[in-house]
Length: 241
Picture 1 (tube, rainbow, N blue to C red):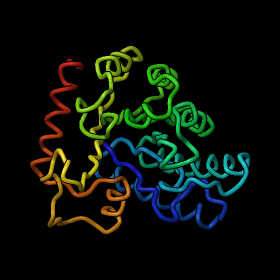
Picture 2: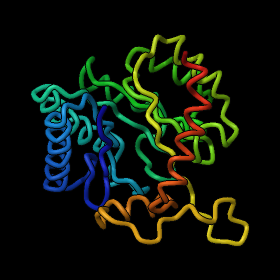
Picture 3: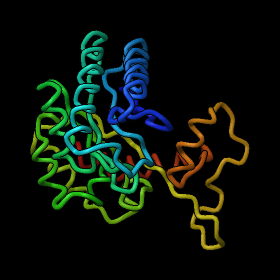
Picture 4: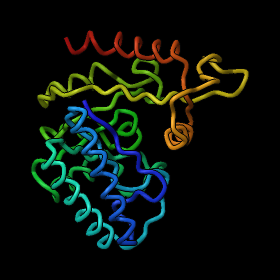
């Protein structure tokens, strides 16, 4: 289906430093090329550095930087035949794009063919009304990430999944429900899943491991991961049939 962009370290399309922006654009282009070569269809683009919560410039300056950089990424996306969906995150992970309306504003500034990705976990933290947020994005919704409000599998928290799926059907969404739970690790005796962490992980880069750990999670055991996938499927499949 596609890939996310790991906007870590110096990767930031809204950076004040031109060289930093250029390197960030090249990273996104590389991800787009990779997805194209793997016959994927989409990337979800987080424009600013994850974990950065302090601006580099004025509102007008940052908007100009991020629009220009995203336009360059979009031009490459068209060239390689991959769609871009701008994804807003919650305010504790990034300061610049937190709501669907903000992501849609960037997409509008780039191209009518640039889309938006919404994440159930993030929108339940940031939106005034999550269902209206989905409706506002409408036909520009290219991907929808699935995790409950506690970031465990769909069905293990408080999100009203029948209403979420019903709203997606209402706008005519027929894309993926991309499973993106990031299960938080409980390191206390109260842990509900004491055997969830894989103690001897293989085939994971230091960058990938840092990204997961920065989100309060870790490498998960195959048993725990499979169980979370099963719970998600049992929650959502009856709603989309």
